[in-house]
Length: 269
Image (tube, rainbow, N blue to C red; front, side):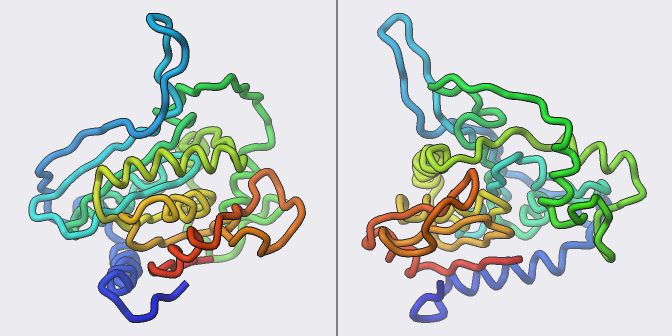
């Protein structure tokens, strides 16, 4: 959704793409050491249930961050709905987006939304059922193999490296892709971003939809780069109707939807 003018935010979005293209072949050892000024983590959002002294703090998200020396103006908030590890390395062992952008001076924040990863202390009961087709479904969902499990030609994934495959399949967790969970995570993420300050949300998969909803809740979302988002945000009463799967597009009041037209949003397939 383009802005009325090519703002500094739009230039930042373009810089992200150039940085990705320029850094995609970098390996550990080919660049100078990163100098980190500070690092840490914090929780955001959530609520407390029960009656004192029998209470539970739950439904919060967890942020891990690294701030380089002389950081750039905008932070990068990296959000994948099924795991932060995807930002930390390539499956062949090369540097991931976290390190690539730290080297370029961006503060980097990795996000686990409520009920997933390091933020799995939920306020409601939920279950996990092992499914033996998940490894195959991952390859198809990641667009590196077809529905018969055959590799697409030219994929960058190291298809002949069993260790890389093992690392990739173990690098995710159950993401609870339901619309109520999208809204829950967006509420928590908005609180995290308001604490961080002006940020670009760099997302993959269902993190893209969650980021768009978050942008309707926080003015500190300055741009979104969304890779392979499965759904979108529409004004109430508009957009495709009917069931679309376990995670559906989200409808918001028109005033909230208009906030999305004020920032650059790049959708990559």
